[in-house]
Each structure stands twice: as C-alpha cells, then as structure tokens.
Length: 112
Image 1 (cartoon, rainbow, N blue to C red):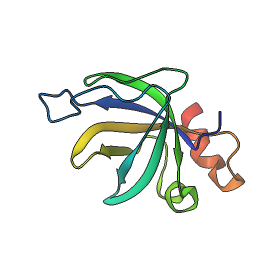
Image 2: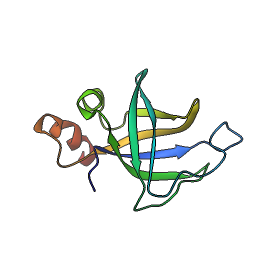
Image 3: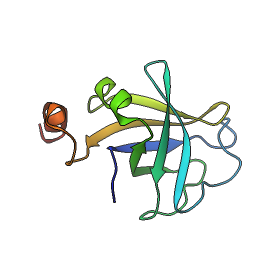
Image 4: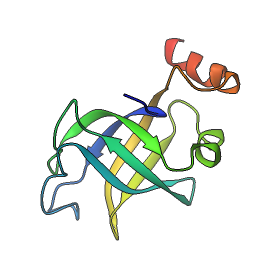
C-alpha cells in the first residue's frame, strides 16, 4: 500500500463534536489542518477497517499533493482532520520508506 506518512489519530466522540457515525471501511478522504493550512488527505483504512467516533488508531495517510505537504512536516507534528469542523486530532509517527532522500532525516527521528 502506498502512503506518505503513518500517523496516530484520535477521532473525537460525537459528544465532543466529532462524527455521528464511523468512517467508511476502505478509505476516508478529508481535509487535514497542518500549521494553519488545509490539505487533502486520504486515510488508507483497508487494513484496519472503519474508525468509530472516540477510536484511536494508527493509520497510513496519502496526500493529494505531497510535494506541498511533506516539507512542512516532521515526526511528532500534530494535525487535525476536518469535516466542516474538527473531527479528529493526530500526530505524525513516520514517513514512508519510499520518499525522496530529503526526508531521510525526518524518518530517522522515529528510530531515535
């Protein structure tokens, strides 16, 4: 499976203002707010299935425009997922191994 980053994500409960229902089981597209900028993202859910409100999961994520997003990120960065409002909060855990060389130092932070 191709992805750009792996992240830990906690979906807000419905009572906290999160989704009313689980995500689809295969993938979930939504805007990701990173450092006050929004980017299109796709959560690759084929291996884990749907995510219910209140769940915390580790998930691979693909960006529509990785060339704009990846230079902004380092391991440990926080972000929010949006659906007209914040629905989840997450943290970058790792970069994909197939990314260009300039991301090597960002990946090494995972192993440090």
